[in-house]
Image 1: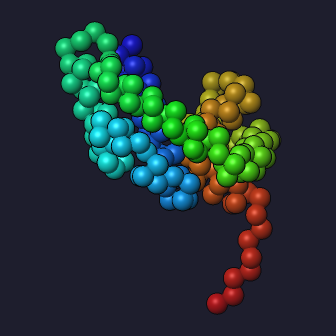
Image 2: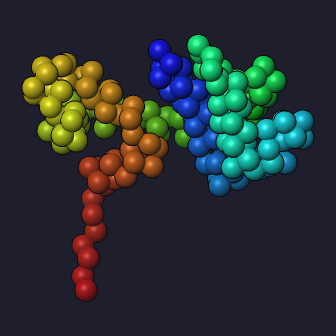
Image 3: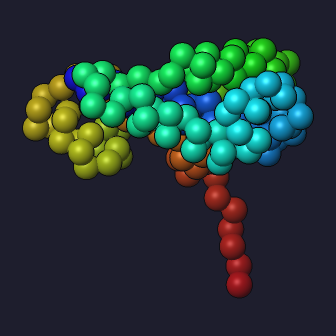
Length: 166
């Protein structure tokens, strides 16, 4: 469907840029690491790149029977994605954190399978009213979490709180 095509592009764009923003804040990536040809094509900031990609999709999809980008912008986006794999996703810094992330998600998965009522109401309803498999619902619940939210939930569930005295 057209809606599905829009969602697919939104996912690609948002993942690249969210991860890029995180990598820049962590000092793993800088704007100067992005080749000048990509910056000239897509923009010199995350905001400019998002603007370019979204406007290109709208321009190239208007009155069409599918959602698409221009070939040049799509190629630049894929080059940006390839850059993210080379410099961020496969970097030694990211790889050191990978095992921690797997352990954290495993612990969250096991917790929510044992305590499905601790998920938000719509997921609890899927298990209780729609009789969907708890394991599948928990996977859907976890996949919808942002990195920050999953770390916050892990901390709430597994890290003891210190005594606060005022």
